[in-house]
Amino acid sequence: MSRTLVVLAFFSCNCLYGQRYLGKPFKDSLHPDIQTIPGRLQCALYDLGGEGIAYHDSDSINQGSGKLNPADGTYLNEFRIKEGVDISYTKFRDPPIDNNAYNLVVPPKDQLYVGWTSPGEWIKYTVFVKETGTYTLGMMYTASQGGKISISVNDIEATGLVDMPSTYVKDDPIHWRQWHHWNYLKDFAKVKLDKGIQIITLYTRETGQMNYGYIDFTLVKEK
Image (tube, rainbow, N blue to C red):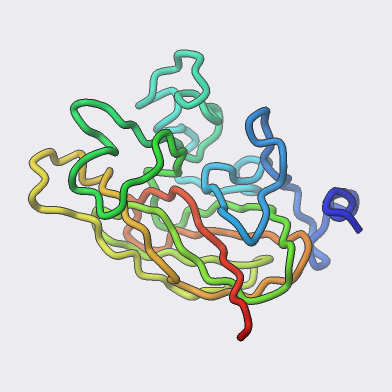
């Protein structure tokens, strides 16, 4: 069965392991297809469905799109502006913001990310897994105070608590830029995934104030 038919079959019954799930994969003109694994899960492309279904956020205001970033009609500044999940993007400017000298890893320019995170918040992703197997996870992130996250698969805990090492750099003279020191946490967990449609949930567990760019899912090849 093709990936398209699998997706249609899943949403025609609108259920997941016997439980009703009303969220649907995010799509727009620049992102027309469901996110696939193995591959890169973009954190800003969480499911459609709204508060309590596709995500839970501590308030209903998008602190990035349309607030920090002016509502000027541009795609990046207004991305998902009416939703509660807080979205921004990496800005390469002078004076430096996300292109600063204190990055541990240089992020992609104009990378959409989820920010302003708080403990108890979560976001869901409907993905298509192309091959059953074990996957290692790596994440592009910032964490000015450190923190903890976890990931579930089909609402079953898959990783346990994951420590996000602090990206605080005391030598940076600009305080607010502590939220823009990017790092990549390699192979922080392994998860088993079955082929087909799966629901991935990313939870902010402790501390918060982290930014989530993307999560790489890499299939572990048996030797």
